[in-house]
Image 1 (tube, rainbow, N blue to C red):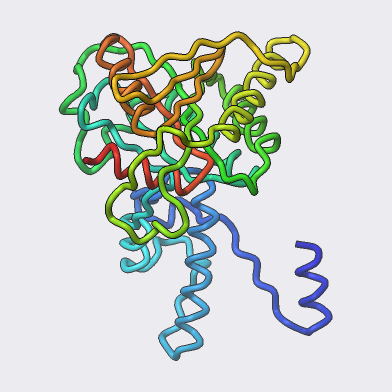
Image 2: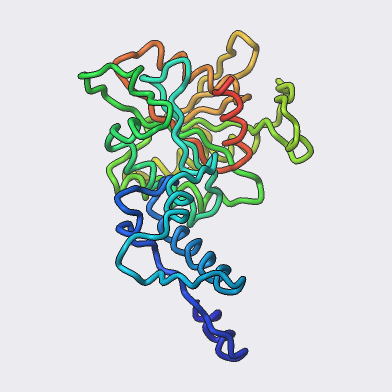
Length: 299
């Protein structure tokens, strides 16, 4: 901000700083996009629209008023949709037992915002009743289930997991949320497949060295958080094959899956076996991963 202010001053440009939107301006409604940080984004959107309206000759609207925003603004802010960002999707096969929380955060700052959103959501299941397709119809009404938080993670190799994972884990921990298990998977989508509607065939010989690196970083982080000395040494693991021949390598605090579909299947099987627990799965680290998960769980 200091650099922007300095440059604006030198160039004699008026620098307008957008502030978080006051929720009272929404006339009793709430933002459609989840997360506290969305109020800052909404404030910026309102400021941009105000400037555009003024510069295109539309009637000037005073956005400093204490009353609600104009109706078109409220409609846009309260009905906006952005898949893969702070998105909650109960699984179609076990909507009451398995819920996916998807956010394509892939920077330290966005990872912290994602962790805060996930932590606040999972502390109270009442947020599920706000979803358009009313998944509470599938819930066991009147019964309060235990919950278990699971991380489903991958990030591109240009990202630094040593910056992303600590920010995620510690922000969640500061809100009283601890992951029971972390699952590390390769993405399905690749750059030249972005426009494809079909999921590519999974390669059983896929290189998992990156995912094992993520797992080691996570295990070291968990060990350090519990008061032990961080260690990069190989730990005891168990490798099994599922019925499709895909491998699952399990460690103390996490597992590496050789394919995303096998990880989704494992989650669904686990939810089916333990119906007294609601599994809350945070999918994050990569927009590619989030997109792949959405395509798989909505089939």
